Length: 341
Image 1 (cartoon, rainbow, N blue to C red):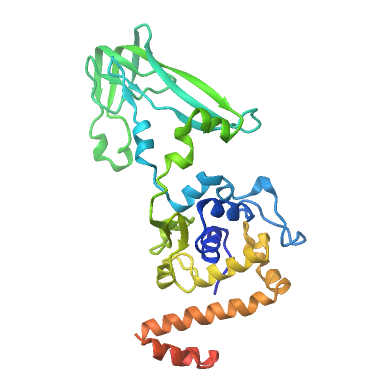
Image 2 (cartoon, helix red, strand yellow):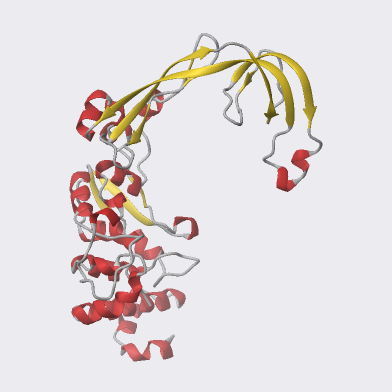
């Protein structure tokens, strides 16, 4: 009938706090605790959590919020991230940022592609996905070789009907023996200990700049988006965010493979967040649902009402009831729902 899910934390926060700013949204998400990798033991407390096992999408500041809301990259950022072509016709990639490695003494690394350098010519024997000619750039080396400028072709072999075989559709089409002039990219690495340091030097990576916060609507991402025909929608008005009530018109009563999360799931997740029951918002958290309901008996009546609300609504829709008919129908005892349907 319904279960709490960690994927519904963001929709719940927005539903329960209409008209919040993006900064308030970030703060409220950061107060939650959940994990899709940690399995709690029976004896652990309902409000237990371990920081290292957290769902970090809820604790990644504005960047995390932008990903959750599906905020698109800004046009200014897209322009800055366009690769350029050098005087030799070679690609020089735009700078990009990487998180620090585990146990590293820095938190962020910016990689800057400064230029391309030609090495001494060499003979190369390898496959290619494209037909090559003198003057072309061989771009997909294998076995540790570098890409290079083709100077001379000694041998070309075309594999027969590779792309007519479905299993080999991604296989290379040619084999070459050729003289190339290898191309080595020269890169510079810059290390930073905090977001503040990173954004001061590279403001383009600041989510305040690189995302289009003027976006007026969208949907909150969940792990089941690819299965879902409906979305948990949001709208933005004057820099404040609201849970789009059209969501409630579209979602199912509860989780199903065809429609993803439903209304009862949303309500139970809301109750779990309200009671700091992080244990049920974890990997295999459903095994602790009965303990959650026993520990917080007030949730049971909320849960039962959610079931009643969702199913009477579905019945009313199926019968194309008017609002007044629906309200009269709602006065029926709950145990007559099936008979009436």
